[in-house]
Image (cartoon, rainbow, N blue to C red; front, side):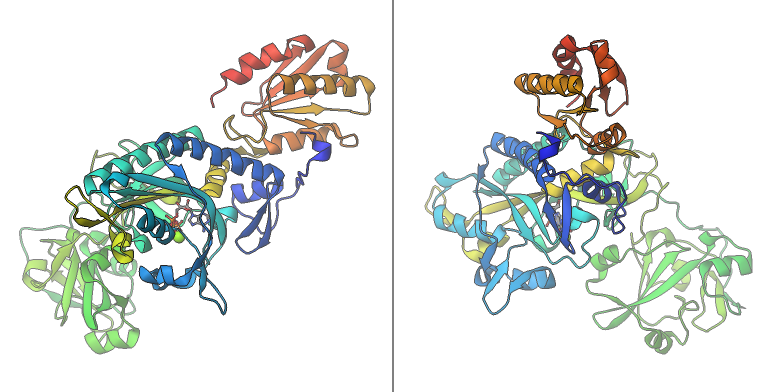
Length: 565
Ligand code: ATP
Ligand code: MG
């Protein structure tokens, strides 16, 4: 492609609305432009990359025997009503005004609708159907560029099996295909077991990458690969102290003391000697949740124990305990008490006295809070010990690249998608669903492969194999040599972006080439030409070599072809 004739509107400045590298660089390289919040157009270079990622996905999906579909984004609402998901998606689903249509945020319903129509017997199974298609979600906080769009491309696949054992096989095929896809794309990722949210169903795993732009927080162990969303992650922690002697409780005035830190400073004690109370309301009943020191209660873990819950309002706290938050404690609390396992068998603890400006010391959990029920409720922190291998856990933000679910029969039950077994008996089809965000793959790659000058593409994803720079195209010798090399490179099968712009200065061309990030740059300059040479620069390392004109293709064959994909 000739740069003079290709629409690549690069930007020198960092756009003001972009904060993360992938968003900044997708705008600066002219890959995308924003049309509205969470709505992006892909310009020619950006769209070329979408096609590259899609092709890698397609090859690996086809390799596991999946068949490609193209389903409508505009869906009759009644199909979604069959599974109860109009309600489950709530405001995230776009509705068409005055018509009974919705814009599909995913396609379980439509695929199940087709399976119901064509799958009659066990002989029609298994099936794996997929598509690469636009999805619509009214994300409440569209941000981070294409990472969280309101319209985005998803590769979504669905498996249909005659039993849960066969579903395991389809699931494993996808697991392997996903690893191949992300490996081929050159992404550093890890896999997290997850709960399946609005999709419903049983086992699911998320393919994640570490990123500040992520909305999930995960605990990860570099050494053994343990990874879990903090909503479920566990770690090894020491219990709060359990002393042999256990003197009676005593009350101490603690004027103005509210937080655990203030309490520790005031009494000159350690955080581990304290227990912090929070009151929740669950099924209209009060529950006191007791954590060691400043440990953060994890509301997802708490929900798993209590079901519905909400924090108590200040006036409710006062009415229930006689005190305000900061002075509440377990001794004498009327209601259910749920304590974190760290507090099991602990004694000589300090906590609120249910009287403003007072605390109680000498609390013995077994003696003074006998009704306490113990659960793992705490949020894991960086530096804690991995339960699997004993090394350190790291807690960080991550983005979900892909997700594989064992759906079971949720959708086939709701929509009546059945098959006949060998004995002629009716059963619901056993399903799985498997998604990858296409734009996210690109954005996550950029998050992991950039420097202060721009993107550093890999061979597999780069929009061009080589970027040919004719430095001063007004000079006849440069123009002639550049044109000849361009033709040669194309003949040899390379995908070339040729910077043939007449008026652009050399510095401008260098900056654009580093920004766009093709793996190799071939630089045709007047001085080198006089000695019969060209310069070749490797974008990732910055390494430069002088190559005789005639040896270029041979040089590329060894350099480019031996670069890692
Ligand atoms: P998230 O937790 O990030 O919202 P999700 O759990 O809603 O993701 P799924 O419903 O599993 O995502 O969709 C499958 C894939 O589609 C995700 O793994 C992700 O790569 C992509 N995806 C989901 N929502 C968006 C979005 N708003 N913009 C771009 N890609 C998305
Ligand atoms: Mg989502």
